[in-house]
Amino acid sequence: MPGIGGVEATRRLVEEHPDARVVVLTSVPDAATVREALGAGAVGYLLKDADPASVVAGVRAAAAGDAPLDPRAARAVLPARGAPPATVDRGQEVRPEPPPPVAVAGREADVLRLIAQGLANKQIGQRLGISERTVKAHAGSLFRRIGVADRTSAALWARDHGY
Image (cartoon, rainbow, N blue to C red):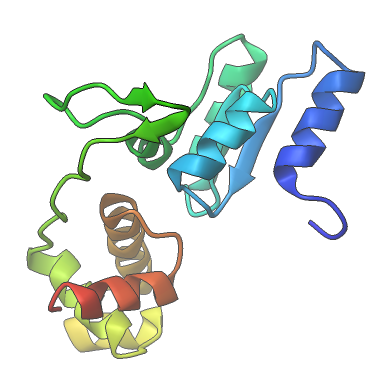
């Protein structure tokens, strides 16, 4: 957003309209940003690569008094299952180690490799003999599972994880 960040805009909006139910829509699922947005008064945190129906459902849930939180944003701020809870030491937050990376297999691995090669969805569909819509579905699912927001990040993730 030009001139003002989403966190500051949320803070100002909630200050001026305390009953407002702000749902952040962003491409950034990192823990610090999620915490800042929620601390500024947002009641929800959704990611831009979510399917439109999920975004609409999230906005409706916020309006109904719920707190919609994308699973990747939740993973970023919640400790891993079985991990010790976060502690505070002299004002410094200490977090447990992140969980190991997700393994990608099957058709999602095929799509990831071709995304990493720079192919467009239509080209990937032609190579794999599937529709462009199916490629988009695999890519969206893949992006959510590996915690990225776009093709470039997915390609970098693929490079870093041997795909």
